[in-house]
Amino acid sequence: MKLYIAATSSPTSKKELPAFLEKYKPMYLLESFYYAEEPVMNYVKSGNCKSFILDSGAFTFMNAAYKKSEMNVDFLKYTHKYCDFINKHGIELFFEMDVDRLTSLEYAEKLRAVIEKETGKKPIPVWHIDRGKQYFIDMCRSYPYVAVGDLVLYIKKSQHKYLNWFCDTAHKYGCKIHGLGFTPSRNAGQYHFDSIDSSSWNVGVRYGHLYVFKGDSVELIKHPPGMKGKREPLKHQNYSAWVMYQKYLDKGSI
Image (cartoon, rainbow, N blue to C red; front, top):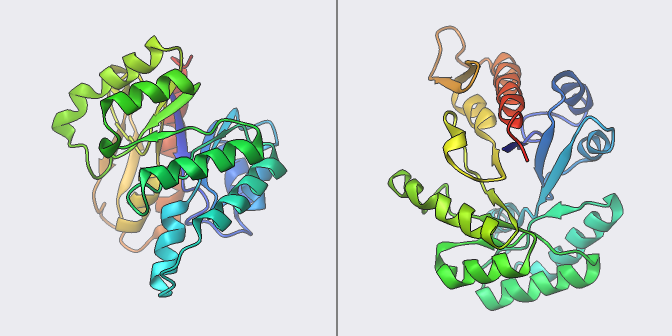
């Protein structure tokens, strides 16, 4: 299983980002187009990064516009810029603009068609609960890589037992599947995803929590003594722990 580490650009400045990446050498990175910087893309092209996935950053873009009271968000214009970035950097794996809940499924499909036309490539469509079971099956029939969303806010842990249905269905139709924002810190192998991503290391920094790699899992230590307000050591410890976990999970990658 491939674990893509997300949000690397969030707590690191443009100046320190190249050294930060060179120090920890993550194998798989997922970054938002909204935050993607040249240092990240340079690292992706350096050969140290085995695979990279670009997220559209649509929700971040929408939230930023909302804070500025700019309610008329032009997602089509944003999509054109997204395509330009994909083409400029030759990116192979990238998500669609899954703005269903902000607009409509029909509009999200329109933006997906724009992406396919302008890049000449198929994006990774993202299934949400509202799309229904048959829609997921149709995605698997039409795309080489699909993703399951809603794993953070809408799908409860008690429902995780159903996740392998999605994985097995995707594999049945010969496509790969990504668990978007899915972060099992232990026993990740019980799920049949080809890839998942996590920004938990960064969330830990934000709330003052520490992550420690335990050989086959990552342990969360909430508010460790003496670490309150010390973002720099937390950032380095947490990132290194998740990179080590990434390398452990990679042993069983396809």
